[in-house]
Image 1 (cartoon, helix red, strand yellow):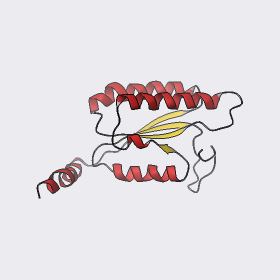
Image 2 (cartoon, rainbow, N blue to C red):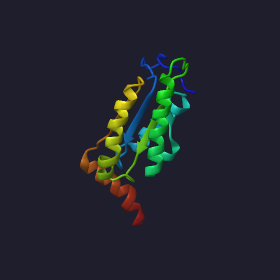
Image 3 (tube, helix red, strand yellow):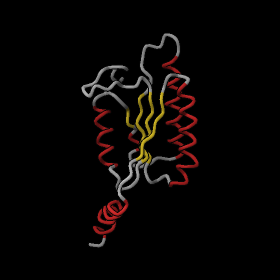
Amino acid sequence: GGAPAGRTRKTGGRLPKCSLHLFRHLSKTAGTTMRFIFDKQVMMGDWEFLPMCHYGFSQKEWTNTKTRFLEAAQAQALPGAHKDGPRILVEIRNDWSATAFLNTILPDILQMRKQAQQYGCSVTMSLLFREPVAQYVSFYRYYIDKMQK
């Protein structure tokens, strides 16, 4: 159970009734910060952040996530349904290459968006970029430098 749809929050915003949001996490571009924000939303009862997605997940798990979201979205749209649809956060990490993301995840998201709209639901995505030199320096310090000491 989450917070009621349309509930006014302290920020003044309203929660979507039914939504899946996908965050494409690129290494060293505020992923930990975003995960903290997502975890906070879960603690507030507003969203579900699938734990299996924190550090990558398989094609089967992605397919299960899509199916689960669309089935719940459809169920909440049935006459007499008295609950909000799902509000799910998904993090896609580097386990999915740019090519795999482009050829699998993105087409799935576009298809899900069309299907979800039939049920009054939304499917959104976000991606953060970082100034390239700062990103590579951070990557080097985090992954390479400490291994050489």
